[in-house]
Image (cartoon, rainbow, N blue to C red; front, side, top):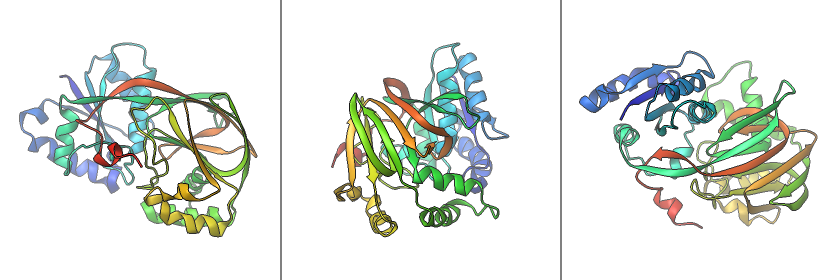
Amino acid sequence: MKTVAIVNPTAGYRRARRDWPRLLASLGQPGANVATWWTAWPGQAETLAARARREGFDRVVAVGGDGTLLEVVNGLWWEPQGPLPSVGVVPFGTGCDYVRSFDLGQTLRDQVMTALGQATLTVSLGLVRLQGFDGHPRVRVFVNVLGLGFDARVINCFRQQRLRLPGKTGYFLSGIQELARLTHHRITGSLDGRGLSTDAAVVVFGLGRYFGGGLMITPGASPQAGHFQVVLAQKLSRLELVTIFPRLYTGKHLDHPRITAAYAGHIKINAEPPAYVEAEGELEGLTPLEVAIIPQALRIAAPSLATSLLLRP
């Protein structure tokens, strides 16, 4: 199998740069057969993934966080030349939420072996059409979670920090700032043709269960499903949001009377005021948006889904 790893050297507080060559070397000949392409700037993983498809690689391994995986999948998906490779994932980032859906192994070395192995699962993709920050239409695919409203505003706040505090500390402080200026959006649209009209602070579409570093935001979602789980946090006070937050780690937030969940494969959303939209922790644009499922679209290197995912709540 012709394999290339696309590595974000800054992932995991720059651990990827130090540890990736050592991990490959520890595998002996299987590791020696893997080409490594290092990214040098944000967005380059997408360009490199497109090149990998054109050059006929069978497996492309995303080494980094969910943002690196998002770039790799988009680079592969939108490149028209060559067969679509399967994708391996080695989680070096601070979040790495998508891989929580799979049994990749206990150690990083185990996960590298899985990423290079023969076993694959076929998963669905989400396709989103939205407005780019430049005002032009933008189309992207995603594998895990797409969100609009509060979570995307937190990411925007984090990106604009003057001190650039790293990782969870920076996100926590950004969350506090956005909580102080909590915005509810008037949401209108449709879920598989069913009308939708509500006020909400957060709307999330999940194929994976987790985002934000382990928050089980869409506990009924599955990467292999032919639909998204859609979760709406309707008009909540700041105190209610703070109170609900611990429940996000177990999926019990859905017990709250003003948090609703549904399943749909084709969604249209408009928000007033317009809402920021994020995918896998990366800002992608603004509402309005249209989201559609692409069933059985991509092969992921994994022997099975995580046991916790098989035991649906």
